[in-house]
Image 1 (tube, helix red, strand yellow):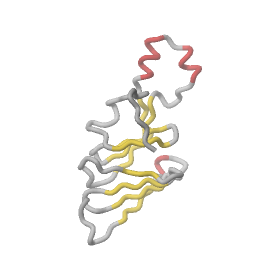
Image 2: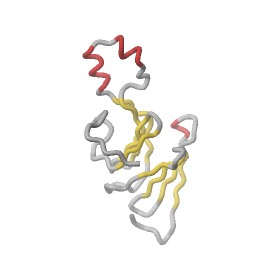
Image 3: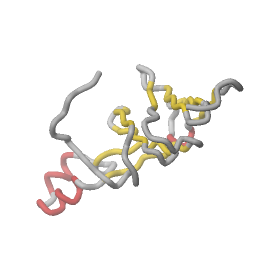
Image 4: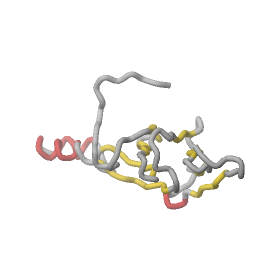
Amino acid sequence: PTELCHFPDFSTRDIHRNYVDCCKWFGDFVLSKSCENTIVCWKPGVLDNNDSVKMDTDADTKQQMENKVTVIHKIGFKDCEIWFVRFSLDKEQKVLALGNQVGRTYVWDLDVGEPGQINYSVLAHPKCSSA
């Protein structure tokens, strides 16, 4: 579902060098994509962001922690330097799919124990050669 949000909870320029054309929640993490051939899994704040740490720190340290991001994993692919090519997740958030500008579709299995174990398959057909 789409939600109209006038004031974001978090904003950063530390993940991508270009405009973001797609982002989705993945549990407590964010998956985002720009035209850099990478989908980045990241989290606002530090990885072990718990309430006891927040309460014990002063205002300056809290402000610095609020502006930090933690990159969990980067998922690379090829031939997708154009904007507005979006990715999608299935309802259970176990499969991620993305097409590219030369007609291939990448499908990743996200149902793994560690991010380094994420595998992908490429779907292609000779008659499909462009976005």
